[in-house]
Length: 305
Image (cartoon, rainbow, N blue to C red):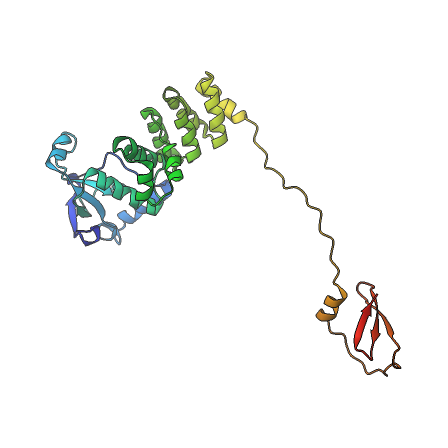
């Protein structure tokens, strides 16, 4: 049965547990708007989009019964709605229930967040790393599965930060302080550093609110043994590269119209004049360019000098 065909049911909140790996990153402003909608009586329980959950297997229920003793379902999509429902004091929430494995649910969650543009670059990198390293999926297979180019998959994998402490620093900063994803180029700089240097570099990025070029400078300083504060200071004092000026191009000389163009563009006023004697030519001068010509009225032609 497809997700769209699943019946919407009301589930007790205490029967739903969050997934241990949530790909979503929602900004503070968007979260505040959702919170207000959920608090409004005109919106509330019946108006908010249902979350998507999967049924837990008996083995999965057993593994987490100490922390979630009543859990029967796990969130696939809708972690923020679940958290805000708990915050608002709800006891139930509307949900669609599907039967899916952990890997299937993870892929569904990735696709949904990717479509909405709410996916966290760091979590995306960790997900791709899980597919490549743990599930032995080739980069070509990942690219084909998600309609990407292999080069794009490799760029995403380059953001995968190995050190757990460094990842936690980045994710907490994004969620509580920064409110938006840290640029991929900064994640690449952290991921490219040795694992033991990643925590201090992540803290330098967060505490100094470093830009991509500054993150690279901080990384070089840390690799040379600089402590946190000094690395941030060095990064901030790095001369800003000035934008390259476009070479000045001399203006093109104004092109005067040729006599033929001039005669075709403008039709001069006509006057009744007495014809010249046969064989005699009338001399004229162009008022725009000064070109001179002779008119052979008998032959009906213009001879330009």
